[in-house]
Image 1: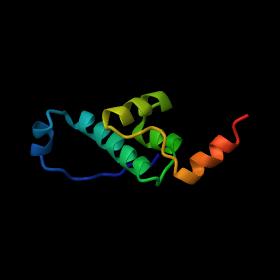
Image 2 (image 1 turned 90 degrees about the vertical axis):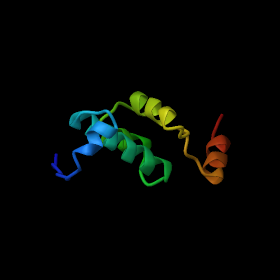
Image 3 (image 1 turned 180 degrees about the horizontal axis):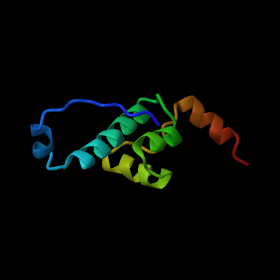
Image 4 (image 1 turned 135 degrees about the horizontal axis):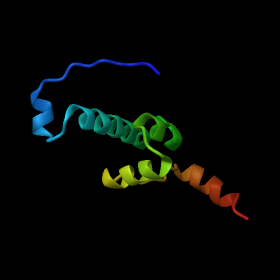
Length: 84
């Protein structure tokens, strides 16, 4: 695993009422949710980035009001066509 170091103002933690560890975890989740919402990564990869199980990531999507199914109309039609 690679470690990435970023600098943040001390006021960030108090304004969000989170300690640094909680803030970093929430930042990972927020980034993963957004990249998933944009269709840049799969649900499995997003869960991995967020450090969550798939089920926990789906719950995070709900908390961020992002639909857990990110299908284009074409992908959805293809999926439905393959249903027995």
